[in-house]
Amino acid sequence: MKVSRRERGGVVLLDLEGKVLGGEESDCLREEMERVIRERTPRLILNLSGVPWLNSSGLGILLSGYLRLKEMGGVVKFIGMQERVRGILTTTKLIQVLEVLDDEAEAIASFAGGGRGLSASDAG
Image (cartoon, rainbow, N blue to C red; front, side, top):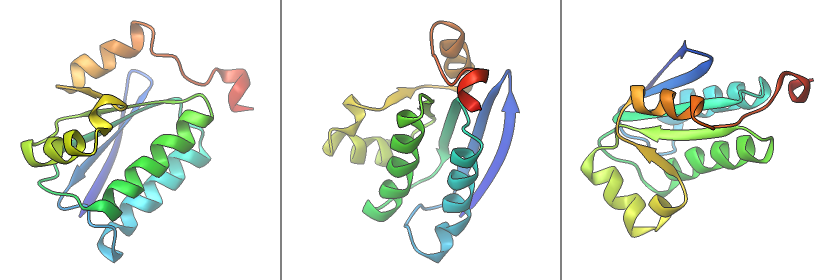
């Protein structure tokens, strides 16, 4: 799997490509999620358009990062889910908990419309 990081309008985007299975092949995702948490990133978008499949271990990596950032006041949004990945989130009912949007432009705009995150004073 591959993870690419970029920023747009004060939002960090992680573009994921490949299956997210939680083994050694997912180390790059674990490392990037740890970096985002260490940096106390206030606004994160996980782009899953390049992810055809994930298993419970891969889902655990994503949820762990999501929960840790949320505990710090950050906001995480998911975009570009392929049908199989969306099906997994629907089956597990996580689709009702996570903020899932169709595309990058919509997700970035949604931050401007009230998506709060860590303020500069929170980031310490």
